[in-house]
Image 1 (cartoon, rainbow, N blue to C red):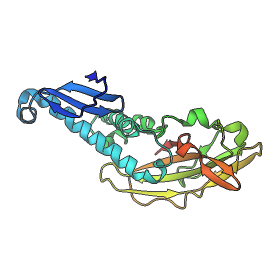
Image 2 (tube, rainbow, N blue to C red; image 1 turned 180 degrees about the vertical axis):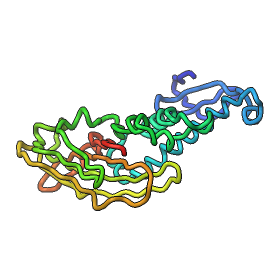
Image 3 (cartoon, rainbow, N blue to C red; image 1 turned 180 degrees about the horizontal axis):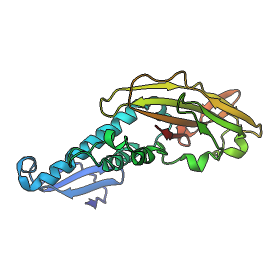
Length: 249
């Protein structure tokens, strides 16, 4: 793969070269390789087919997770979140030690303590990760999804961006079955606080326990706002907002 430089920017195929636009700019690569039909049928490519099947399954699981938390993720995400979530799903799939090669999957991986540990701590916005923004200790009640933050002092317990005057905290309790693809989610009310030295215990309580079966996933959302003339505006289109999976059961 090479990077295209110059005034003229091309997209498409010319002879054996493919020109395309990516995050890094305009790129060019050679066309060719093994045919799709050969990969699908040649015994020599059995491993390739197995790897492709597992990658496709991991990508689908990643999309399922992102879709399930979409209402939260639109407020806190980066432009690489899809690929990063797929990477995490692949790591979880790899701890499936019971399925045969080519059929290892995220649902089985998440049935293990190792799989749950991989998913726990996932940040959906790589520009604002929980451990670098939020320093207050908190606990998660996995029976109700309630998150308790004792003696929370915004001015001391968060690293807030320049211009921020207020912070909002909320949580969600997600029940997600990666096998059946069924999901249900419950949200807590939003707690909005001025960023000052006031200290108080904050309790975030989801509206209920989501229905269904599967993995119970608990999320914390931290959002920053700037107040101007009594109206709060999202700071930098949510670039500094945090969405993190704080617990998996």
